[in-house]
Amino acid sequence: MNKLGQLAYLGQWYVRALLGRRAPLQSVIFILDRCNLRCKHCSVYELEHPRCKSFDTIREELEDCYRAGSRFVDFEGGELYLWKDRQAPGDNQPAAEYDINDVIDLAHQIGFYSATITTNAQIPFNGSHADQVFVSMDGVGHYHDDIRGEGTFSRLEKYIREFHREKPVCVNMVINNRNYPCVEETIEYVKNNPDIDQIALNFHTPFKETESLYLDNDIRNRLIDTLIDYKRRGYPIMNTVSGLKAMKVRGNRVVCTDRYCWITNFIFSDGSRSPKCMGYTHGVCDRCGFSMGGEMYSVFHLNPETILAGMKLRLKQ
Image (cartoon, rainbow, N blue to C red; front, side, top):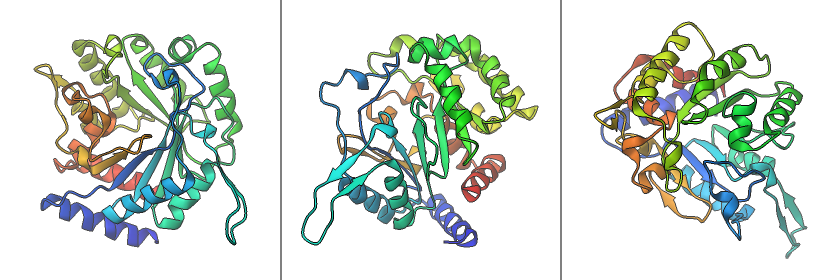
């Protein structure tokens, strides 16, 4: 579909949503649990038998999301570049071997306007078919290594540099009580790195057994004011000012909560599904740190900055 057709669909979806129709616009599909890191905020590496979906299962999930109204999909892991599926030959069907690029191509064939991926950049991702690549980066140098393991930052730099800006690269930082002193340095690093387009900033959401990483609410609110100042000065921050304001904590509760998070539906690696993110399923929405929560809140409070930013991002992809 051309850009004009996509714009028409977005407008139609938005008007229907304002009238009370709840249909997803974006889907997040986790296709495997297997990972090559042992990050402090994650328990995937502890699974004795990590799950890995088949290509056919992913096809069924994509088709279900598309029928529900979704037109944008983000694939998550585990580490996506570890995903493979080998299918034996069948009746009139040759043997096949699939990787993440085949999954992205499938999403486009079904009709999704864009397919994005998130990687820890410990494996080269040259030649990615994704419309946008998100790289998980939790600070600069030893701050990143402290969370993800020694040597991970140098590999991340190397593989981002080798990507040669084939597609937009956005780094995704989750701010917690170990790396928050590095936030300003990280924003400056992104601004001065010609191989990175933008940075998306989130705060740690305290899922079970990760509560110790949760950032003090007062520090979080002060940091948000700092991020807003950087944004207004033209730094390449993907979050909007209104979206950042909605991520503030007031009265021990995040402003944006979960009221509008149905815009994105989720299918997890075990095949379970949720109309909202895992923060909703785990009951921690009052302490949510996901940037999309703030952005979706702002969209449905008719904030023109966030609406225009979302349209610009989607139509660019």
